[in-house]
Image (cartoon, rainbow, N blue to C red; front, side):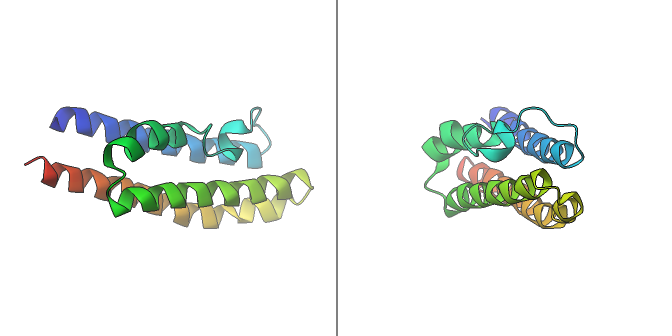
Length: 122
């Protein structure tokens, strides 16, 4: 179980990093498909949360918080994309600071959930 759990959470962390990279790509003018950035359920991490995390360890308060925080992050991303599309590029790019804090919190929650599950499996 430990190897599978590690792979599962490594994949989740990578999916989250991919979201972060896609958001930056759009804000710097090189993005093409906004859906994974705008919609938390289309995002790779959101799909993982909905199909793996919530069904398997949704009983953990941290998993519920991860879901809430992930959705909030997408709300912020939508606001930044809207600013960018309205021609307020500098404001949108400046807003990346807020997403950095949120993305760090998402990674912290993923680490905490993984740690808690490891403790349970002992």
